[in-house]
Length: 161
Image (cartoon, rainbow, N blue to C red; front, top):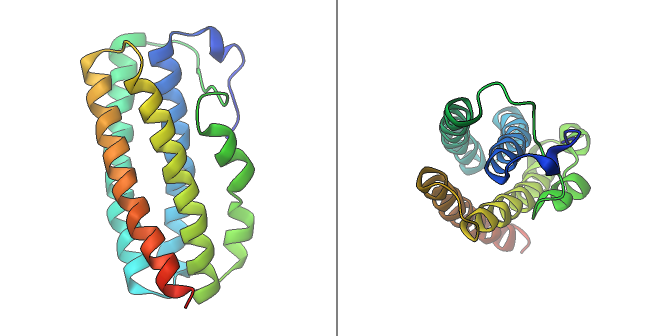
């Protein structure tokens, strides 16, 4: 994920929308790999379900962006909470090289990191004075990614035995 020039000068809501869309797109890339590389059926099912959720959230965020900011230039701000962790910790090239059980473990690690970053960003928006519609999607994102993280951590603990 690469930041947009001048993003920090854009309205916070636009920064949040564009940054969350970028974060979700990284997660989608990760989840799409799971469809062909994962060994465990639960990982493949998790990937399919989560892909659908993220695509819906992106569509909703894009609609808000269009309605509120029109054709404003991109405002991906990699300095918002959680984004530096994704940049430093997600390595799709490494994940792409793995298969089966090794893939599953690395997928869980990287997906957990991505979910935690989305929760941090969503929680940041919840602390700001944002429109109710944006607050609602931030709550949805924080809750969904927190629940997914619990599931992922459970798998990691179980599979480490």
